[in-house]
Structure formats: C-alpha cells, structure tokens
Length: 82
Image (cartoon, rainbow, N blue to C red; front, side, top):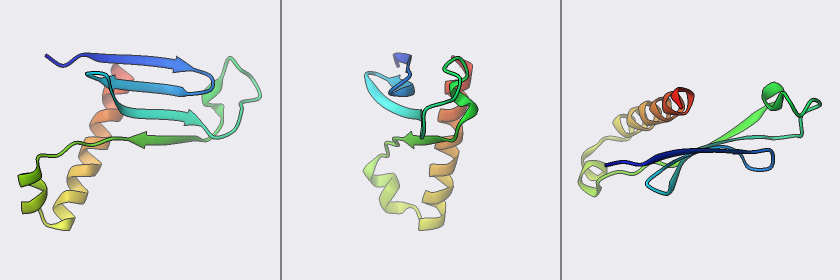
C-alpha cells in the first residue's frame, strides 16, 4: 500500500510525499507580500520520478520525455486532490 502525505510550511512550501519520499515540492521563489496568500508569487516546482531500469533502457528519448510530463501532470493532480 502506498502512503501519501502532504506538508506545508512557509519556508519549505507544499510537499507531497509517497512512502516517505518526496514526490513533488512547490515552493515560493520570493516571500509573499501577504503571508495569508503564499501563492500570489512565482513558485518553483521540484518533482521526483522513479523508473524501472528496463523501461528506461527500452524507451526512446521522446517517449521518456512524454512519460516524464505525464508523471509530472499526475503528481500535480495528486497534490491538488489532497
């Protein structure tokens, strides 16, 4: 079973973890003018992806890029659902 957790702090941003490992992190690049509205400023997104070695070895670069974009889209969607 996959355990999912979401954490928020003004310094770290919004973090989604799966089984204790970071899946995605959204953090403000500059402090917001209003602390109650932290997403009124640009944010940086950091995402982690895991792949089976055989899958990576068999995918063409364009297929791997498509898989990364799909995984990122899924991570952002999961973050929005929590």
